[in-house]
Image (cartoon, rainbow, N blue to C red; front, side):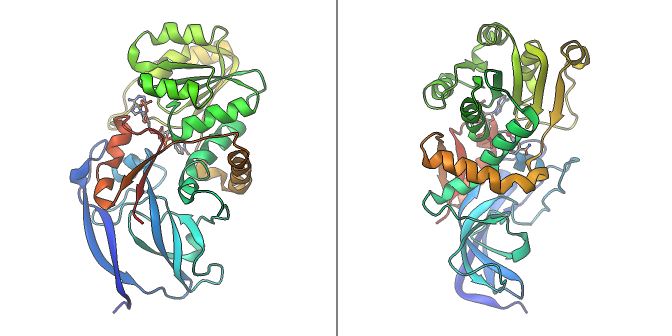
Length: 340
Ligand SMILES: NC(=O)c1ccc[n+]([C@@H]2O[C@H](COP(=O)([O-])OP(=O)(O)OC[C@H]3O[C@@H](n4cnc5c(N)ncnc54)[C@H](OP(=O)(O)O)[C@@H]3O)[C@@H](O)[C@H]2O)c1
């Protein structure tokens, strides 16, 4: 019988049913269970914030992906940040702050070797380790610099421009000396893009007239497109490429149902004429560069040169509808569930 930690209860969110497309509250259940004692090599983490990421839609659907789907009855897979409360791994000590794929659960028992990193930026808010100093910031920085490689003065176009990844992309591009255009949904988000995230121009894709707005914002076309949406925004972007453009495929937020995958425009002729490159980017392929990216981003945070927004939900129950919120565009900034 597994030994359990006395007096502790593990509140967790499990996948209760398999969704087709975007999951809703009916696909998740909240339950309480015992907290196991760590065995050799294991670490027990008490989580403080759970991450909510668009990718989690893909993790619960039974469609081909880069990672197998979460099983029915299992704790929902997610990134989280928390404190080590017990450790039998020589690399981790009680009290250290760590991040990893701990799941939507209050206590995560993990193999020490699977922990992503120790959070050393203890002078900064812990939640940042899931956003600007976590998956989102690293995706923005590495996708932009490694695939987009923009040069100073070039035009960088960003979709989901007010979101966790997009807001970081826009600001990093400005720090690299680029001009930026952000595309986001609604007047509040476009105002945020201009006034807070420093975009040179922001376009509300829900207002209509996207082709004309893009033509006005990028009269000479875009050099780098950080594409988080696919769908109509990207269809419009196809016609505004500059010669030698780089198109980073980072996300497909506008496609809510992958089965079957919707048909779209034929891109080949546009890529040929503009000698352009389109490339898929998955941050998990770039672990070698995480530490450098986080150090650079943390430096910009400390210097006040980069800002962020968080949208915080409280408690496990709130997590059940959180992925849906992302696909309804209801989040302003990094979506998190606070459990501490
Ligand atoms: N490839 C990778 O390694 C990697 C890693 C991390 C994230 N990503 C991707 O990066 C993108 C942004 O992630 P995030 O965590 O920063 O989320 P986010 O942008 O903070 O939130 C998702 C946003 O998607 C937008 N959206 C939803 N439905 C849309 C639609 N039909 N058309 C256009 N936009 C729509 C909404 O913004 P509006 O209100 O502005 O529409 C919503 O706020 C996602 O596509 C995600 O999958 C990829």
